[in-house]
View: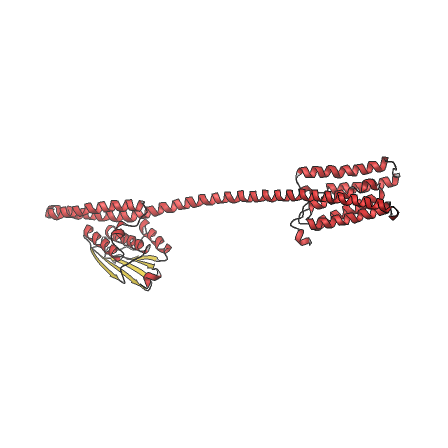
Length: 406
C-alpha cells in the first residue's frame, strides 16, 4: 500500500498558493478560537488545564508550519497525520467539545489534500472514530440523542470537507501534470527544432559535396579529353588540315556534351551517356569517345552481361571517367586497358595504364570521393602504382540479387 502511494503522496505546501492560504487561515483560526473559548467562555478552564491546552495547540501549530516532507517519504507523512490526530483527540478531551470537534476537519482536509483517496478515507475514518470517542467522553450514552445528532453533524462536515479537499487536490494534480506535460512538449519541440537544423546543415553539406564530386567527374573528364584533342589537332594543322578540322569538329561536340554533363550534374541526374546507352554499352561508348578525343589506345573488355542497375551503373561510369582522366592527365600513358567482369554477385572494374607510375599517390577529390561512394554502396575502391609500372585501379561493387543471378 505504502509503496503504491509513494509517487502520488504530496503535502499541503505543494498545493497551489490560494489553497494553502485558505487552509492556513482555517487551521490557525480554529486553534485560536478553541483557546479563546476555553479561556474566556461560559466555563473557562482552570489555569493548569488551560496551560496544557495551550501546549497542545502549540504542537498542532508547529506541525502546521513544519517544513515540507519529501514526497517519497510517505511513512513520515502518515506519522505526521497520526500525530495531528492524537493531539486533536487530546485537545477534544480537554476543551469544550462544541468547538474542538471542528479541529478534526483540519486533519480530514489535510488528508484529502495530501494523500490518495483510499488512504485519505482511512485517515478520515480514524478521525471520525476518535471524534466519537471524545463525544462519548463528554456526553456519555445517557444523552444518546444528543450524541447521535452531534455525530451526524460531524459526519456531514467530514463528507463536505473531504469532498471539497479531494476536488481541490485533484484539480491541483491535474494542473501540475498539465504543466509538466506542457514543459516536456516545449522541450521536445526545442530539441526537434535543433535536430531539424542539424539535419538541414548536414544535408546541405552532403549536397555540396555531392555536387562537387558530380561536377568534378564530368567537367574534369570532358576538359581533359578536349585539351588532349586540341594538342593533337594543333600537331595536325600543318601536316593534315583536313584531319585537324575533323578533330576540331569532334572536340566541339565533346565540349557541347561536357556542358550538358555539367547541367545534368547540377540537376542531380545521372550522366547523360547513361541515358543514351545502357549498362556496359555506356561504358564502351565512354571508352571509345575518350580514345577518339585523346588519341590514346584504349582496350575494352566486358564479361558477364550488359544490364547494370542503379546506383551501380553511375558509380562504375564515374569511376571509369576518373581512371581515364587520371591516365591522360597525370600518368602520361599511351595505352589503357579496361576490363569489366560481372560474376559471383558482384561487379569488378579494372583500369590499368602503362604510364609513368609513382612511388606514392595522394588521392585528390576524385579518387577519395569515389572511394567513399563505393564504400557507401557496400563495395571498395583500391589502386596501386609504382615508378615505371603505370597505375591500376580496381572497383568492386555488390549487385542486387536479381542481377547477380540474372
